[in-house]
Picture 1: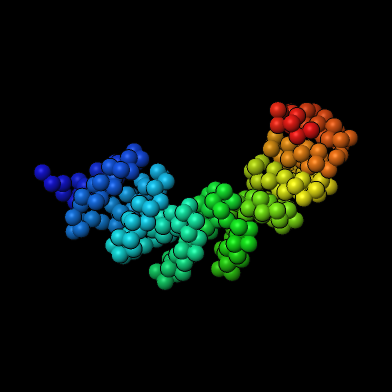
Picture 2: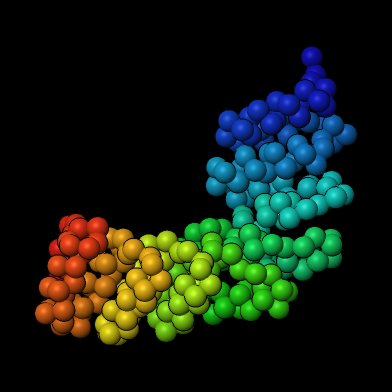
Length: 257
């Protein structure tokens, strides 16, 4: 017997929660148009999103854009995340305008997705584009959260913009925005790659002055910067500090010496 609308919706939700995206998509595609709802499309879209099935997310978005008469931010985050992961950045930026037309206000989460769906520079965001996104965010009066700031600092560092990355990092420290050890290490690594070992050490000390205890990644980045700058004596002193006051040397610390 054919499933009624409520049963179809329940089955689709169950498959989506179980990350069975293929079954969720099957239920959706086999459902007559009159039985589909915006919620069913949302559930199927999120199931495909969690599975990394970006093209399928965009297929669902084509229907959702028509069916969802009361869209919210989550509605637009589905295609935005898919576009970002497919490298179709202009289309993801265009969705910000679509959100305005639909009278939906983006939050910091939307802008974090624009920086790469939570994976920052690994998703391909250039540092120039990242700054453009940051500028637009500020113009809209949206306060960047710690996730966004961490992503931006990481992208700037990986783009070789060590000075900008450090400026942002210090701004976060002054604002009591806590970043993770990986983000701190990215900024220090950028200094090391630019042969700016002095700035790497100054930044390490800045981090500590705000009561932050550097982890292995940050210390190892500082150690690597000293090694690249041929600062053997300072590297030995830092190694002693890591053992006595820090987390202790690991294999990466030794390799960085």
